[in-house]
Image (cartoon, rainbow, N blue to C red):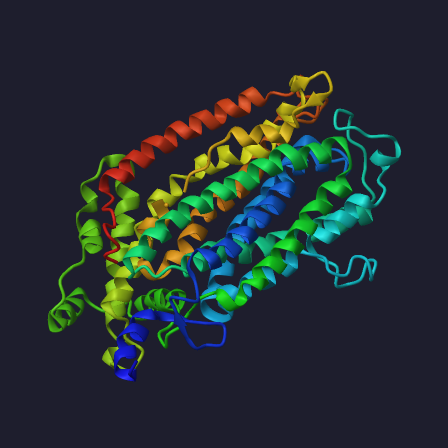
Length: 506
């Protein structure tokens, strides 16, 4: 066959915008697809298995072997969960701007794992799950006195406490690299421009969540049982071993992966950040100058801009905040002009950059009205689990369902923030979604701290007393119900004025 006849076939076989592991053009026939995606799904299942193996039953470990009060343990769980949910924003920035998704996943996996736990006891290199395993194996006063989860808490060894929390936050850093990158890297294995691969890409997301939820359920049912009834060291050690195996499997697929080509354009983070910086630098620019610039470019207002111009017609309860956002959004148009009118190369923001910034800004009211829901959600791994300990969880005379396993009945849902962010920021869409739960967890910790101080002391039992029969979690839940009602009203107000991003027009 002549070379001229081969060219069309080879051109079709090349995947635009992707290269192989040696930076050569990626061919559809020998890269990507389900073969590559299966390796990536495997590492995600292992990471979720490891993460929920820690987070789901953390309150029990803190109030048990580490001897913390219920209120203090709940605050610590919420602060850690908030940190773990907000750090993916940083992880997404690092991946998109510097390391790339593949390298970020590898580094994040290594943080999860302790590779030197058998050769360098307490080495400065120890980190992640291995340190959690080590801290769980160190003796505590509770363990020495035959502690069980139903006993009153005792004091932990200070060194064990420091070691545990150091390792815990390293796990949060590890999750920050996994969460925003693994799913996006899996989606990179399918060419959205190819009809067949586009359908496979849709199926990939379905199977992704199926396996992810399956891994979570296995964690909640099996690993929590091991932690409650056998050994905490084993309960933390199994996720460590699983992550080692998953990382090896992920590396085996290196030669089959498609790697997205990073163009010469700036990172979406930097582009949008520069819009805000330019707008501030041009704060003295008059509306007439902006209108003249738009007329010169021959541009028409985008639908997101139209939303801000007419958003003051919404109901009174959200009017003031929407008016403030309207002003700030239109203020971003100042980024279309260079400082002092000098149109230097690279200093003027494009209309597309400005509209992307507005698209993120218009999500702020929706984001804010979801925070109370995040506060309520934060209780599932704290007070809900502690209440589960007091329940009759017998499945058979010799088998009790672990309290933390009750979380498996909670259904999870994501795709709004993923769908509404600009197309170039889709990799950060899930991070934006997670940031709701991050901020909500911090607010939950703050709320618990305030209530504990206000209702406890002077011989009184606080709402979060260690003995739940003397506590008043019902009062706390009524407070959350009231806040949720207020949030619902605010959400409806903002939702009425929101203009949806249809078909990725931004």
